[in-house]
Image 1 (cartoon, rainbow, N blue to C red):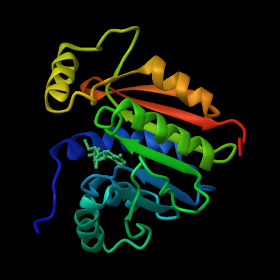
Image 2: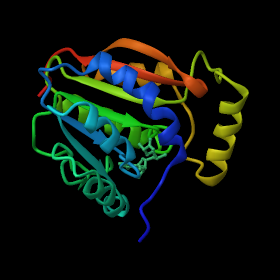
Image 3: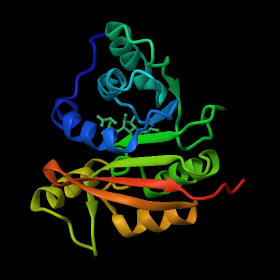
Image 4: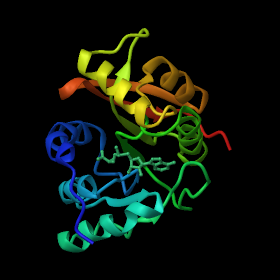
Length: 202
Ligand SMILES: C[S@@+](CC[C@H](N)C(=O)[O-])C[C@H]1O[C@@H](n2cnc3c(N)ncnc32)[C@H](O)[C@@H]1O
């Protein structure tokens, strides 16, 4: 098997790093990544936050590729990837200070996005943060023509996929106990939504 590679990850990693540097603190110990994809983000970011254990997860098919990036990196703070399919409750039984998920919400069905947000709400404690990166619609409008075309292409290959409305995501996050802290405008008409868990709803 060849090591998987995503050109988009190379493009967006530095702008995303700038966001993570504003969100991750020296007190944070553990971050869960949902839908880690190739594993490129995991090794790039973990190298920048050596005190933080970075836990990449994804569906089973992607775990071998993520492991290839991790073993090549020789980093000690990227943990062996485990399966987390938001359709099921695979959330590792650990306490996480942060959850990071990039470019997943337009791939997952809306039902799965809601499951993902519910999992975050059930498992993150007060003060924990969730960072959701990707393209979003605002007030029913795409933020660019390229995003409108991307949405069409996504729906052609999977009618359940598509660019989500910020308002729907925000409402679901609030329902699960999170408050929006920052909505960062990112290159290529993407956003990085940063949430803070307000209270524990067991
Ligand atoms: C476009 S890729 C993004 C990968 C990576 N985060 C990045 O930014 O390059 C979408 C990711 O979402 C993951 N994904 C899709 N459905 C999922 C599910 N039900 N549970 C967990 N991950 C899922 C895919 O396996 C894939 O890794």
